[in-house]
Image 1: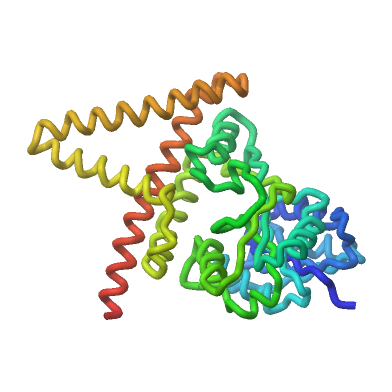
Image 2: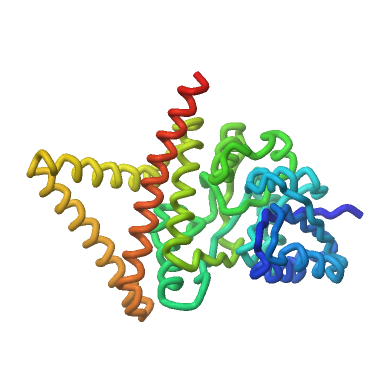
Length: 336
């Protein structure tokens, strides 16, 4: 009997976390006999494939499949997993995630109740490592200063949204909208949800759908993540400029203002005053919010850790988006 739900997971060198994800899928209240898991692996060398093989050998009645992803990109991994999937509903998960026991059951119910094309829930963001830095990063990326108005991080009421994390798709919409864009190495999910909305489908967020997500453990890892997010967001925006939201525009505008004022201050003393004023206001907002959050969480380390994490998110997203926009326009002119 074919599975009703196909869970697809892109992975590469995830030996540390893939076992916990697979265990959480085995424990789903929906019933593991009704689920198949398809892991699309980019040629892991850290033992990930061996972990998957061990679980697959003992997971029955859960079906666990491994497919190769030689391109080693997330959208390619998703497309290969979807091609191997047989379920009428396709749930995307991440190797760094641990869904709640009723995650799949809630996704199935919400899809049925709303007739949406894609549904998702909220992240319970946890530190990716021990220590105050990792703890600060987890708090920072869930806070509005790190997430803007993204409901899946900050929490929101059930309703239609622009995008959801991971996503549970009615397979008919996957067939209608087509493949994930393999030219976008990141931001492929937002772009896909935008195409769904352009085709008349609805993206639905329901806070009863919950998943633990482990944030990046260090500031350099966070910097790489958000620079990559910004860079590929710009490539997506070059195709769909109307998809831009205010929260996404502020960091590149801030970075551009900093650079512009810094350059201008060499020739115009008033620009130096403007630069100092902008930085003063920015740091006052960051440290003020950090002090409040530190008091709420009774964690003094957040007064330093949060400004460091927030500034990393803002500056890396902003510079990545500007760099990506320049690269995207150059590529367009080259093709033109």
